[in-house]
Amino acid sequence: MNKKKRCQWVENKEEIYLDYHDNEWGIAVYDDETLFEMLILECFQAGLSWITILKKREAFRKSYDNFNIEKIVKYDENKIDELMNNESIIRHKGKIEASINNAKIFKQIQKEFGTFSKYIWSFTDNKILKDTDENYLTKSSTSDMIAKDLKKRGMKFVGSVTIYSYLEAIGIIDNHTKDCYKY
Image (cartoon, rainbow, N blue to C red; front, side, top):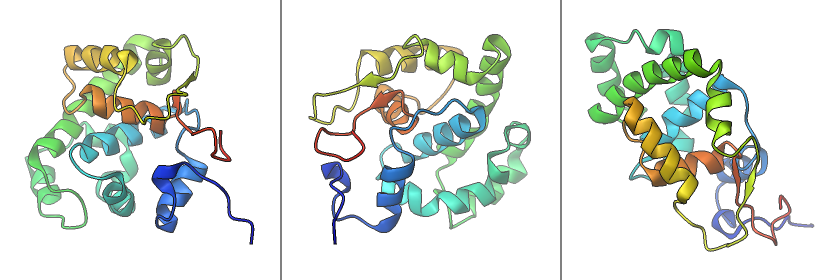
């Protein structure tokens, strides 16, 4: 059996991780719905492992109305309580409140730029950044700049490390290693 060589961080991991690596991570995303979902998930990931989020992703989709931004911006205290009591997702009140807040900011950015995609890709002049360092950076000058701008706009849980991970997830930064078949 010819086993695919992948990035070291995903070698010998669970199938859900391999699927994420092979079919999502580092692939350029321009669709606002996917960009929104990934932003919410990355914010919940802060301080946790990504595999935890992947395993809870379907529960998040169900609990968060399939990441329907129009519904999320209207979430109230009752919905926050419901989410806080939902054992199938991450029950962190600050992150739950941030997800609602960030949805509102996301919509403001869409209104200002036409799409969130135009906004986020403008930081790299619509180019994919190829990181050939292979030391698995956790932040960069680009993630610093975007995190600073998002925070200035009022988003929460969007530090440079979270945004760097987000940029990898949505393919703005392609960090597949040279020995990975996705390189």
